[in-house]
Image (cartoon, rainbow, N blue to C red):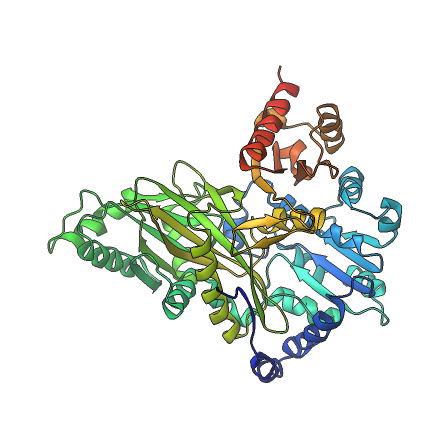
Length: 516
């Protein structure tokens, strides 16, 4: 039997030596004591500062519709207020509508909403710009001071973010509290190039390809080499190192490419016409300008009659424990097969164990490098002629991804846990749960609906999550509904079929409510 939760006896010495280098790394040493003393005792006082900044490449993130409202995905962390002595400070770019806050507080099991509300501090920047939230906070000394005033010497505090860059490390240092997340010095491990290198070290299968490419010529040479190794290859993928949710990816058709000495010249002539960008806001020129800046990879497009896009979530805790905490089947767009739209939980039983094993090997390698916190690994799984499945590791996401918030919400609502051996989410009193989740329930007709309108609709149609039967729908990104016609949904049920039926019911109800 495989042990999917392990602890490294040598990580404390490794991290201690590593952590002495900078003020941020010295602060991080506090996380071990906090994890040991606080995580096992829900009655101990603590303060959690949530900064849900999408601190990614601004050229790519600016093309995400309603991007500023993705900050609302971490409102699931309001569920931490079920611990009666926990205080939470949530900082956002814009004020969060009271109806949205009340909605989450109402979901709290076993805690009166008024009690939780007293322990919640909401702060914001009143800033709609596309710049990262963390940068906005650092630029506002008075806001920084308000956060400090909410901290207490009697209650240990830590910072949690969507992802960690030098900006989040700076915020951690200026607030004087550690950050539960990966040191930004290790971020190259989660780039597309770094992921491929680490997969090889971990002995996990990955697509044929090349990494550390920084020019159009290098991409052309890599494509030529790939096609020569695989003469029947129909398609390849070119990816920017720091792309996310499929943004920064492009496909190249190679089905009719020559395989002789003319291949390189053919690619040089044809690539501008054959490069299909997932992000339609980018151009061929801007794509390669980004690649020159951040680097990228070329890899074979995984083909097959039946294939899926699963992922595994892992956690490396401050004491060096490695855990496989969930698996999902991701839903990608039909046009390119590159853009993330949603997910099903848990992943298919046909390959969930293979995912867990591969995820554990990858996480163990990352632990050796000093990585801390939650992260995900994306795969592509293809059914073979004999009915078995083969999974290829695609990329590591050293951040909270699209599968993080629905799973956290499920845990907080139910106190259940994912069993990586069985591939099931087990409830404390028996039974299992599934969900279907999406950040991309979108229609132009939804524009104009407010969060209050949504509350009316979900109550009238009995869509709200019901803790007595542990089924129903939980919404997120509600702030994006009125302006962008966009909404996030997690439909929870005891079977995968029932979960998807609940999601379809949401779509049916919303469409019916906005009929002309």
